[in-house]
Image (cartoon, rainbow, N blue to C red; front, side, top):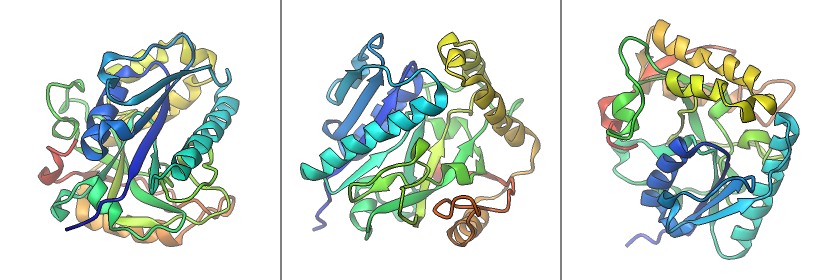
Length: 281
């Protein structure tokens, strides 16, 4: 009988209940709600009813501008992760509320079982998939069906191949993109699925969110909206072949300015997820 490791997941969120609800639903099922730690950024935030059973806290707002706030946020979350590891957790997953780490269903195991069988020194990375919306084919994203039965197209993105899983106290860089002072290791059959730019309606609402605009997020959101254009316009390639290729390339290629981040020659490759994923998330 397998002995599963004790794994926590944490996030910090502001004004994003739509994706946080899915985050709680997914990681609660995979890890147990009692192992989820949610920090609401700002005392004007309230804990939603769907967070019942988790460890949810309202925290004083960290920063007012995107760059400084992000550095402060990840410093705070790195400290919380170190505390959890010191209190008996074997691993801590750090992700944004619109990011979901998924095991390829062809393995027939959940996230906790998969990670319990991994040898992790400091950190482990899933392969990043940045989902878009194929306009004209895919409608608005809703909770009436699973996300992966509504969204099928993703760009293989180095930005989302993050050092999301840690087994020792360390310092995450901004956005969980790397662990300072350590290399990254990409796991086979493990994917980080990012949905923050997978719906035009949600994207437009974010552009109209004066709180985000005041913090300097507007340019960032406009830039990332191209994911929808790629999903709509680019030819979708075979998922298994190209994710396997991308994992190899990202393992060995690094940008010269950040040797502990992955690179992929700036290629924009869109893949279509196989049907086997549609009930996972």
